[in-house]
Image 1 (cartoon, one colour):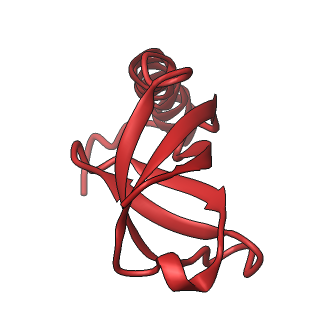
Image 2 (image 1 turned 180 degrees about the horizontal axis):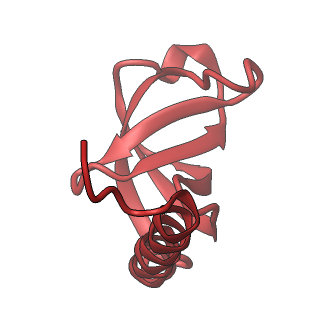
Length: 95
């Protein structure tokens, strides 16, 4: 196509947009740290088979340690860390 934007400008615009999105995600996720969330345990983490993963009722992904018998149940998890694309937490028990 004619009148294309130079690659350098495309990359600068993309990086600016990426930074903006990541800042907004971090700001939103930081509100969860220290809270207790109900999490539907979906299964083992894709990146660490020693961890479980699930979702809050607001669809936030949470990764935490736990036994496989928790899969397909709803448990309470204390959110301990914001990892940008997911939250990290600790099971505090209770179904």
